[in-house]
Length: 444
Image 1 (cartoon, helix red, strand yellow):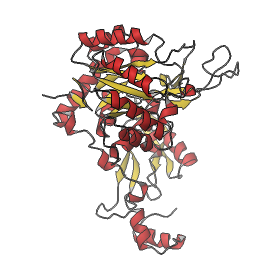
Image 2: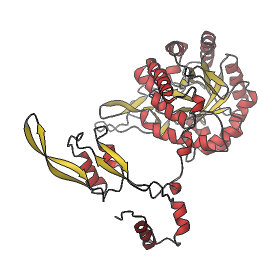
Image 3: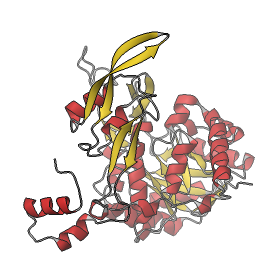
Image 4: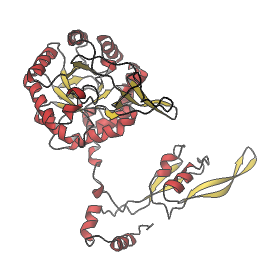
């Protein structure tokens, strides 16, 4: 049997899938509906200062027929009163005692104001508090949201105010709109946080309408920056989550978000150190029903791989992360094309010739189709000239048609850092060329 239950900084849930603080968690109706479908937890849409939202507050990037590859929003925190939200949170928690229910908070930077709302949140019976230090629009102009998350001193100070008043776990939600995510992460740890949530949305402008010349989306002819989320931000989120996970000064549980759409996405975050994963855009796109595939898919994968609990795989891929200077310079792989799968679209040839290293030729070939002989051009890699960049593999539309095949002596290894210790300094092109010739590395 596979056990998907988790404990994230003292917050327990039957599975790692939580709804992120966002439009899908704006009411008791929505959260209860999600719990009925099988979601393990929910972070209530941020409550705090009075706000008014605007119309036309979402924009999206659609690409190659896929809708909402990325979504941008200029929506603020809950526009319902704090009292109404807290009442519904208490009612929801009573109905669903086994699910994780976390209250997201954001108020002005005053100790007494934070103490007051923290105590009111605790009175609902919720399982934890998430501090929203990430909103890049609207609230940050008021000195909240990203304005806090971007200044480590503020992050530590407000977190300390909260933790000195809180009797339940506190998660700090970080903004990605910083040069180094580790600094606010360390500040959250200094302030006494029980865990870290990341990433919040990325500061973006979605585009310009070429007919009206207005920003997209347009609010009565005007627009501005908003927060970007969805599948397109996942690589950024994975990087930042891993940075927090491997930092020896932080060492806190992580609730990860940023483009989680499938169970595969969720597993990637867990393998890079996350305990829970939060989902927003995918639910806004497809609805709460996606939880069925997430739970089933993760459970099946774990059973197939022989894992019984998420504790066995958490952070298992962190050991694979290193810096460029530690990579093996003698590792060599080349591209090979499976002619039986090739559809002669020539995308690999064009990409290699115009955007890479000009090592794919198109050779004449006869192809027999329904008794007829077609004279076609067959792409073929000149292996002696292939540098293994992998561009052809990426552009090929046929799965398994192009493979990257290792051709080096796997017993040899040297990194750039090690090389610098062996060669004369300052390094010359001639010294590097001699090293390449010694190890049989093609020079281009």
